[in-house]
Image (tube, rainbow, N blue to C red):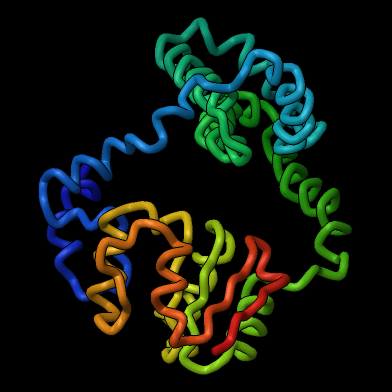
Length: 256
């Protein structure tokens, strides 16, 4: 729990990003209890269960090689006889239920703790293989090497860098969603690229703490009684205003 407690003193730093601005107990409690995400809990509609199951099953099974799956089944069959491993399996299943019923498009990432716990169960089965266990990492590399040899698509860094270098001077960049804003934040704040622009995320703009933080960083912006991103753009149109989509592949600007 220490990282949660550290949020209070860390929020008083000069960081350009303070998620939730947890400088007070009220803001801190809002952040750690995550009320904006609660509606997603156990909210997956029943008519989407079959689709999600069919989509997720091959992905989850692919996390283990064809040689490891029989070992995992063997471990699952014998482990419940031991109290410690019984609770380990129970916890892993609880993570799976939480992830499966979480109603967002990226809920699959919440299965990672379950996969880790299931991997721990393999210990006894892997011990039975002795020195032959070295075949598992070799097999994993062999099965996945062709995937890594494929010519990769442009990376988020490449897309974001190309975007930043072509933006008009002193512009306001309106982002839409995590993939765009996180990448641009890193290049802008950490690597100090394009310090002349202002990055504003239209989804975060709905939060008071975010608008307040933007105002503190850029006092020249007009933010009085502004709660709508469209109104914000119209009140600050003395600067070029650009918008970019989630994938950083297209953007458009309305220059002055």
